[in-house]
Image (cartoon, one colour):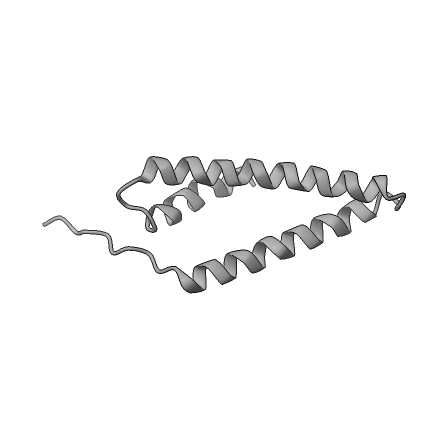
Length: 86
């Protein structure tokens, strides 16, 4: 996953060309939040008394929810045009 972070940063900069540092900070915060939610999802599955394989299903559900949220967001937001210097 770590190899994808620079690519994601560059792509997201198109959505906020005036504040690339803020966009990078929000991206890393979102990645940290996703890590926390994944750990919580696995812990909840284990605490419910399900087998250890249930943590995989919890991760699948959380990943699917994140992808759906991404698709819905990208469909509504268009990146700002990047000014071209002559």
